[in-house]
Amino acid sequence: MKTHASQWIVLLCGLGLLGAGCGGSANGETAVDRQAITHGELDGNAHPGVVLLLMEVNGVPAFRCSASLLSPTVVLTAGHCAGEPGEFSGMRVFTESDVQNGNNNYPFAGPNSVEAVYWQAHPEFTEAAFFLHDVGIVILQAPGVVLPASAYVTIPAENQLDSL
Image (cartoon, rainbow, N blue to C red; front, side, top):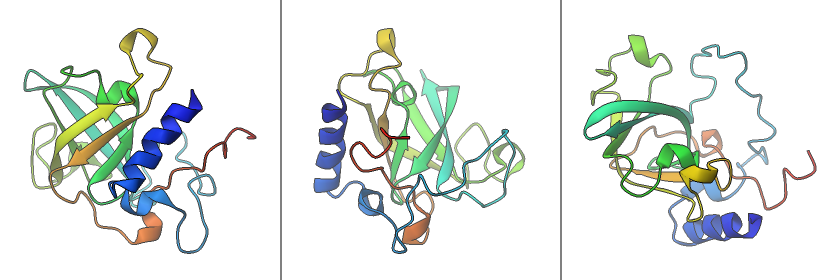
C-alpha cells in the first residue's frame, strides 16, 4: 500500500504542487533530522512550517488538526483531517504559534489565517479504516507563511522511515 501513497506524492511533485516539499533542504537536512515538538509545549517560532488547521462542518468550526507547510500554499496533514469527500464545508490554517491569544479571530477567519480552496485525503482513505492511508493535502487560497526554503517540511523518500 506504500506504493499508492508514493505515487500520489510523486504525482503532486510532478504537477509542481509541493514546491520545496519535494526534496531535502539546501543543507541536506530532512524532516527526520529536525528536533520534534514534544510534551505539547509552545516553542515560539522554532517550527515555522507547522500550522493549525481548522475544519468546518456546515460553515461552523468543528475540528482542528496540526498540519505542515510543504510550500507557501500546500499543506500536508492527516487523511482524517482532510476527510472524505463532502465531510467538511471549509478549512483554514492559522499561522501564529499561539493561536488562542493571537491576532487572528480564532476560530473564524482573521488577519493571521488563510482559507483553503481544496482538500483531499489519500484516494484509499476511509473513516471506517481511518488508520490506513491517513494522509491528506490542503491547498491554500494564498500563501500561508512564506519561509526560507529550508524551513518547509520535507517529505521522506520512499521507505526512508521503514528502518527507524
